[in-house]
Length: 109
Length: 295
Image (tube, rainbow over all chains, first blue to last red; front, side, top):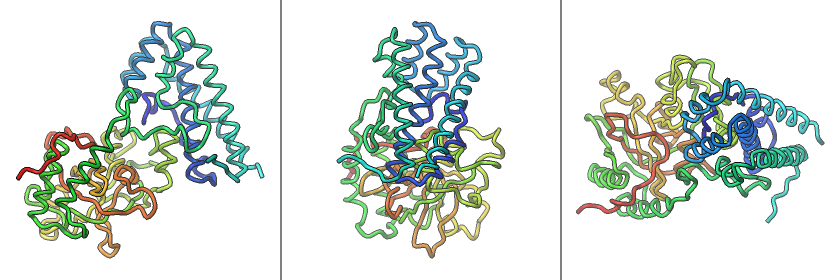
């Protein structure tokens, strides 16, 4: 599934590092799930932190109805100034952190 | 049975990322509790806490409707597979024209769109054959394997297939990254390689046939399970000596249930008559309304 924000975040470097790890299929899927879910939680938190209670509900309803709908970004653009940059920033930070974790893990014997 | 791993680097990452994930989740629920936990959970969709490998994994999108309701897809697939047994021979051999007509009719009735073995006087060398798993294809100049994935789960599922060193028979799917759109993305995601060069009449009218086959929409069905995908012809191949008759992208192989083990198996592949380009690419479910042959 491509969430509505997929085109605004860059995760290739993380995917490349994950792909290089010697893992079983189950392990790879598990770490991938954790990475995706952590990114989603982080982005969700950033968006919700910028919205009023009423807009939070409207946004979450749209997200539940169709998480891939690009119109969600139109809605957010009306409510949050520079929302695309904000999403990109928190995603970049988490990706960098996870990449650091992978490099650290590679050294574990 | 509990899952265990002997890979220390995995254990290290698993513990670290699980703790990080828990902390993110707690923060999210606490910080935005005024909208209600259920509401926030709704926004998380399938991405709830995933601490143990093999459980809690996000179900494949084709099993979910909007809102997360599981559909009885399997039953309809099974019903279609049962019906196909009456018209598809056990031995994987080229179908006769009469057999192709019956299969085409059954598939058309099952899916609600017109499916044919031949179109505009053109047909492939066969419509029932062995599909093998292909690699990803470069979609535009500068494309990479990592860019094919929308998320880490995609990469874990399809990334191991790799990317073919050369281009598909029709070159890139878009001239540049700037021109690369959702349509081109879906075409590579759900592409087939078929033996265009073995289709009757190809050698006499290469240009005409090449244009006809380029991104032609096809329905691929695993007759044993009824799993089906709408795909496009994105490449020519495989060579006759391989023993395979067509190839499928990693996503096509996944959705016809042949992505594991030898990554090959028998499938039906028929043209879809879709002049207005209304039928979306991707996994498709039998409607279950017309799963009967007309006499």
